[in-house]
Amino acid sequence: MQIPLIAQIGVDQRDSEDVALQKMILVGVALSSAVAAALWGVVYIAAGARSAGAVPAAYSVLSLVNTMLFAAFPRFPRYRFCQLTLILLLPWLMTISLGGFHNSSAVILWSTLCPLGALVVHDLPAASRWFAAFLVLLASTALVHPSGDAASLPSSMVTFFYLLNIGCVVSLAFAMLYYFVDKKNRLQERSEMLLLNILPIEIFNVLKGEHRTIADQYDKASILFADVVEFTPLAKSMPPMELVGLLDEVFMCFDLLVEKYQLEKIKTIGDCYMVVSGVPRPRADHAHALARMALDMQACVAEREFRGKRLTFRIGMNSGPVVAGIIGRKKFIFDLWGDAVNMASRMESHGKSEAIQITNATHDLIKHDFVCETRGTINVKGSGEMEVWHILSEKQHDESNSSRVAAE
Image 1 (tube, rainbow, N blue to C red):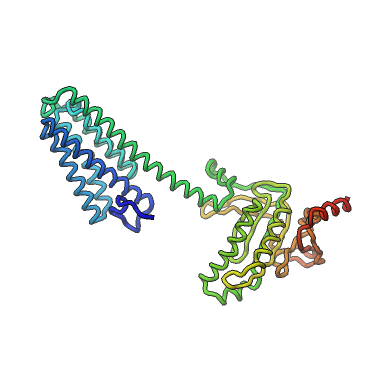
Image 2: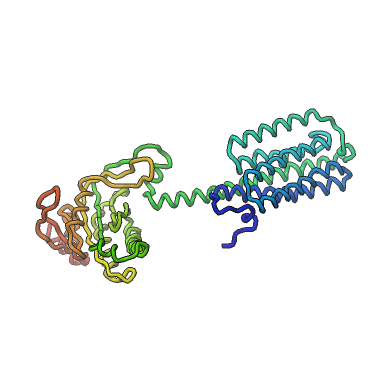
């Protein structure tokens, strides 16, 4: 995408987006006001007010020279100070030369662009100081006695300049603030989109409106962990960037499945992928949806190579109550806690390659709709002997109904 010419003046690759935006706005205002000032000067000179017309003409030249120096020597603080000073003082000088507020058709209104511009391109304390300076200059116009070039201008000309000064200043101020607010809104939208890629929308909305620790109990949820088999030897055999690219390809496939089944990806830890169903949006079919995703994950990995490598995964699932939320104040993530989470992790770590291993808790929820086979009992760290199952496939609709009737 081609960068506008105005955005290239005084550009610095080290600038943040806010500073780059401030530079572009100030240069835009400087150039547009220089053109307007030149026209103002021509009109006043044509009307016979030559000394008054010389002031906006001088502003136009000085503003252009200042901008050219900024393009050659991009020192934004100096450029900003010089430009704001010109915007503040020269309309005031024109007011003096024309003999006061009324005779000059309130040309000092152009000076308001100085504190307004400082709000956009500077900080609040600096903008306050520029505004105080403007008030001092405005008050000083009351001491100016009517005289000067404006004495020869007809009243219709004074009224005409009133309209031009008020209309143009307000239009410029509105355009400057509109552009700035529009850019700010776009930056905010980008920030919110990045945050929504990290947090569920429900949690994002809570964070926007409240400042509190977020932790909620979910009585019915299912958790899945998936891990690459023999990942350590694989990692040693590949360059780091190639390995990261491989994982990115795999996890992108899994991310699409998360969206397909409207689940919630919690995080990736190295080669481990963690998903939850029923959190933060409760759903009655939490175990079924997660089981379908697990089968699709198996198929996705079995059907293709990733960076020329064939991968196999261990997948573990469990169902039960969890606590979900955010803790800490920096680099926070939405996470899960509870025995159900720990047991799902154990199902993965104690599982077999290319198998989806589940607990009795999950099996009881899906047994009528999925083909499962028992693996017998295994010794699970921290829980002792327990029966586990493997999910083989989803039952066909008729077969599923027959199983329910038989069970009843």
